[in-house]
Length: 208
Image (cartoon, rainbow, N blue to C red; front, side, top):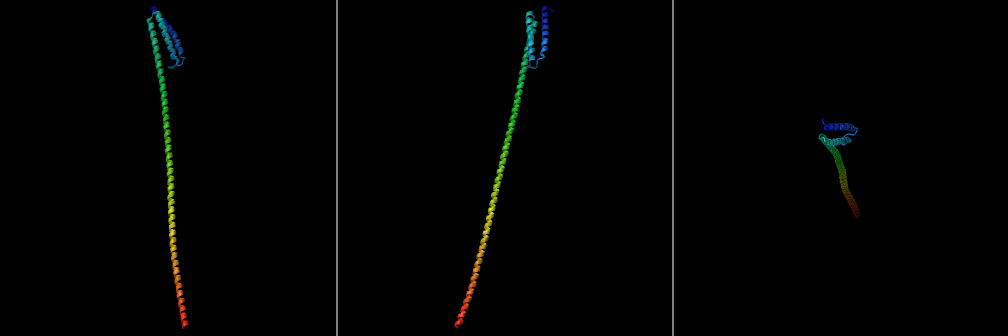
């Protein structure tokens, strides 16, 4: 191992000695894609890459510089992946919220349609009940009118029958009066004839 390789090794060991407690300390931070632990870890990784790159340039160690580039690229990739996951999570949450809103709106529309249907059904039932009541009232009035007309016809017929019966009785009474007058006239005529005969007989006796 030459001096350059030894220096790169010492830089790597020193960075690992510093890096390890820092990484352990990050475990006390909240985790999650958008949590501070990932951000702090990325800062540590980038500081590690920067120190390696600076040391590589000072020591003219291409391997150290290459490793620094690899570590920086890895940190950039992890950051990009984290941003994509965070964006995907936010998109999923937004999609979930939109889905919930859509479901709530659909439920509200269903409730509104049901309320409207119930209101229309109540209106139809009310109109049907009103028509039924009106029809019953009309039928009752018509029945009363028919009964009244029938009663009037019965009463009129009874009056005509009574009038006709009275007229017959009047005719019978007139006939009886005429018959009685005729009998009285006949009796009176017979009495007068008898009286005239008696008077004539008396004159004859006086004259003889």
